[in-house]
Image 1 (cartoon, rainbow over the protein chains, first blue to last red):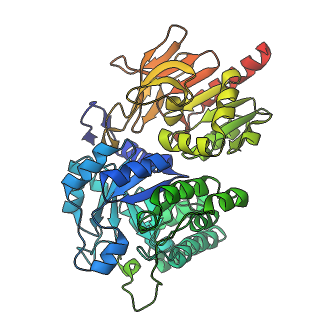
Image 2: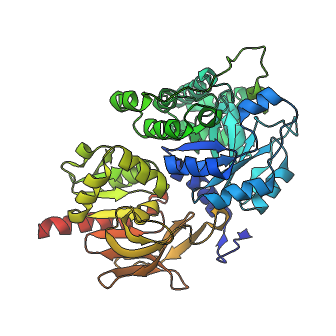
Image 3: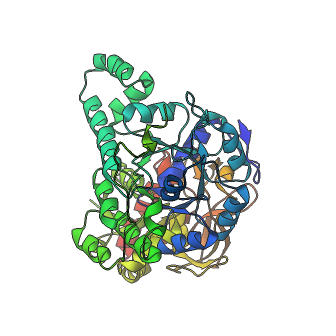
Length: 302
Length: 194
C-alpha cells in the first residue's frame, strides 16, 4: 500500500497493478520515440507520438561512442518532462534499482529497465514490485517475457537490436514470443509444468497465458525499426505498438519520418496508406548490420 | 445488432470493442471516413489525445468524425473526453462539440493515477470502480450539461449533454459493463427520437 501524493488516494496492490498495466493499454497503437532534447520531444509530440523516451544518447551513438552507458541526467529528463504533455519514459540500467528510485523520485511516467545501457547486475533485474512507477522490459522469447512480468514489469517490448536500423532481430524476437504462445495454447494441461520448466518461467504465468492466449501485459516492438514499413511489419506480426529509437532523429527529415511512422502504426493493415506515407521521406538512418562482430545488446538480461 | 464505432487511431480501442460485444453490440474499428457509414454511435477511447487527433487529421477522418458526432451519440473516455470538449485548458480544442472545459493531466503524472469508487447518476447498484490514469477533469460544464459523477472533493469526472457523454476514467479497463449499457441505451433513445 502506498499513498499517492497529490490527491490522497490509497491504491491497494491489485489496483497498483491495474494502473501500471493500464497506462501501457493507453499507449497501444502508438509510437514511442527516443528524444535527447526538449526540442526533439516537441517535434515527437507534434508528430503524434504517444510517449517519448528521454535519454542523453540514442542507441546508435552509444554504439559508436562506447564506454559505460548510464541513466541520463535528471535535470535533462525534467526539462523534457516540462516540454510535453504526453507521458515521458526514461531508462535505468538492468538491476540498477537506485537509478530506478531516482527516476521515480522525479516523477517519470514509465521506466525502461534497458539492455541498451550497460548492465549493473549480471544476475538480478530490478524488483519492480517495490515501485509505484511502472516498468517496461525487453524480451526475446516467452520465458524472458514472463520472468520480467514475474518481477513486476507492467509492459514488455522486443529487444531487437537497438541502434542498428536493422529490424531483423525485432522480427526474430516478436516471432519467437508469438510462436511460444501458440505452442502453449495447444498444449494439454499436463504438459504446462514441463513447458514452464523449459522456458524458465513461473508456472502460474504460463498457465495464465495458456488460458488467455495472450501475454498478461502490453507488448511493443523495439530495436531496429527505421521505416514506416518496418513499423507496420511489426504491427502485422502482432505487437501492440512500436518504439523507435535512433531511427527518427538519425534520419534526414525527422519530423516527416516521425509523422509517417505514426500513420503506419495506425494504418498497418492498409498498404495504400503505407505506400503514401513511405514517399519522399529523405534518407533513413544509415544502419549497421547485426552481425556477431558487433556488440549484441539483446544478450544482456537474464 | 447495433453497430457502434470505436475510434481506432491509437489507445485502448480493443478493450472498448470487447466491452461492446459483451453488452450485445457489434463494434466497428474506425480508421477511415468510410468506416463511419452505418454506425449508430461511436466511442472515443483512452489514449493520448494529441496523438489521436494528429492521426485523425492526417488521414482526413477529423472533419467527417466531427460531422458524425454532431448528430449521432458519442462517448469519450479520458482522451476521448478531451477530444469532445469545447475548451481545453492551455491548448486549442479538438472536436470542440461538448460544452465542457477540461484540464488535462489534472491529478499529476502517472504516479498520481488512482482507482476510486464512484456513484454515477443513472447507474443502479454499487459504486463503479473508476480507473483514473493520468486523467483529465471536467473543470466546468455549461448550462445544458448534466453532471453524472463527481469525486468527493466535488471535481466533475462524468457528464452528459444530450447525445454526448464524457468520462475522465476508463470503464473499459474493469469488468463492470454498466456504463457501456448506459451508452447503448443512449444510442437506442437517439434512434427512437430520429
